[in-house]
Length: 347
Image 1 (cartoon, rainbow, N blue to C red):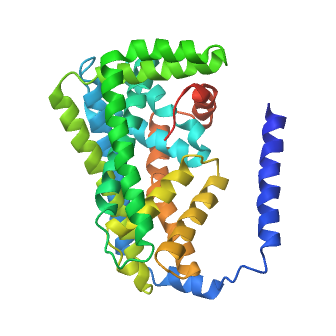
Image 2 (image 1 turned 90 degrees about the vertical axis):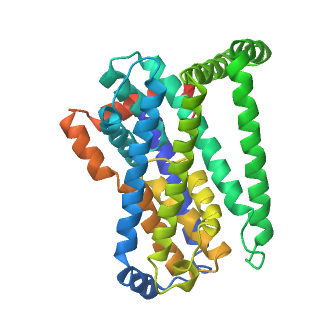
Image 3 (image 1 turned 180 degrees about the vertical axis):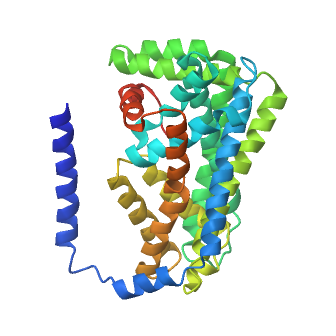
């Protein structure tokens, strides 16, 4: 298994090296301008962005405590440490480590891990729905004179349709989740039993997660928390871009205009692999800023690197401290989570 992973890593690195080599004549990158952008950053905006991102972890803990409410009353601060540790593991080891959080929370609150994986499933769906609502609401009202305006509007419409689809899907699963899981399992079983089992289990997990919301009030509060969280993430993007005071295309950015950039970053992070995933995210965000906002490639690249630090890597110090205090080995926990990852969803 280790040899196979080593071969995959080697192939990825060689592919990246070949891409850089064959495109070296097309790349016109002024390193002097890049470092000038870094030197002139308004660091108060970066600090504000990091503070905003840290506040989202508090909201995540509060939302998870709501999901646990029907089963066990816990304080959001009780599960804040596992949030720090879990997202630190994802930053360092990639998406395969995403299941560390439900595993650590299950241990902390002394509940079966299956119940927390169900909560994790519904958390991902609320994230997707809230992000789609934020995207669609903002993108549909961007100025008409903005370059690539039709791309923003079409993306907003697509996000709206996704939001409606998620809402319909949630209602169907909440009311008839068991029957849907059985029907899909029967349809997929002739093609592949493992796939049929996996899809049916995910549908039941989503149903169990929805059932964790004991009342309409819980659903309403959870929706508001999710929307607030993703709105704050969007504001963190705005603060990071505005830190580049020497680049008007970034320094004057508005909330609605950051939505495509945010979408590109989330898409790149969905397939994140250790370390190399950092560079794919920087590339995705830098390309988006260069194409959609007309920012110089040097400023866009510097901003992409700072976005990675603010939105992903800034949690690492808190996560390492929390892991030390809770006697958690990140490497061991990530390996255990990776063994369960194929059966779980990722966002």
